[in-house]
Length: 233
Ligand code: GRF
Image (cartoon, rainbow, N blue to C red; front, side):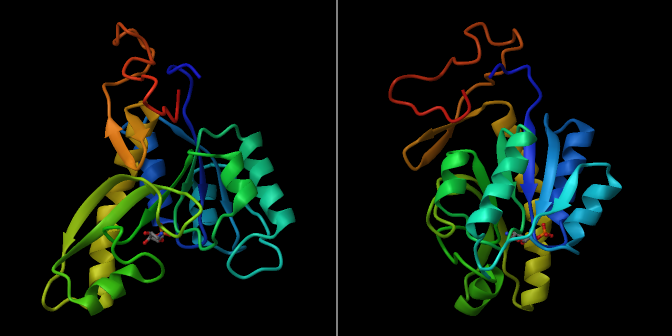
């Protein structure tokens, strides 16, 4: 992959799609040097499909199959095929409510990212903002991370904090976390698109801009070494 080629995102979501909108807007404004190549949803009437349609971005309902919390084999194949046909570099989960399993993870190994509404590893799983409120933490936030076989457990790319206020309800806290997500997710995706991120074990570290655009005399692979796993070289 050369750094000058268009960086293509596939976005998967089951809900309203506000993170997708933040990502698409960041692409449109140039803050995120990428294109949303396709949006897929496991929910036929999900807002995310409508929001994508309004923007002229290819979007389609892809039936999830017979299970409630994961894709069945046929559905998994359909998702993989659609993302491969769209030639995506990164699969960005934006409120996708199904756990991704073996074949899917293998097809896009190291190239699937997710946004989670807490400061991981605290409060993985559902309704993380409610978990944070119930626990009584004073600061929570959101996390963008790589997806691995666990639940909200992959290497952390970026985090943004949100204070918990004395008069917060689950709804008000969730709303402020959502707003933080809309800043954090495009920012992390931009770092990926600019090849500024390397994964060293569990640690995601920043390197200088590695796009092959002549600005980096050492070329797009500068900063990588044998001890370093480059996810997007
Ligand atoms: C966000 O809160 C995100 O953290 C979680 O799912 C929600 C998606 O919201 N993974 P939206 O559909 O992007 O508005």
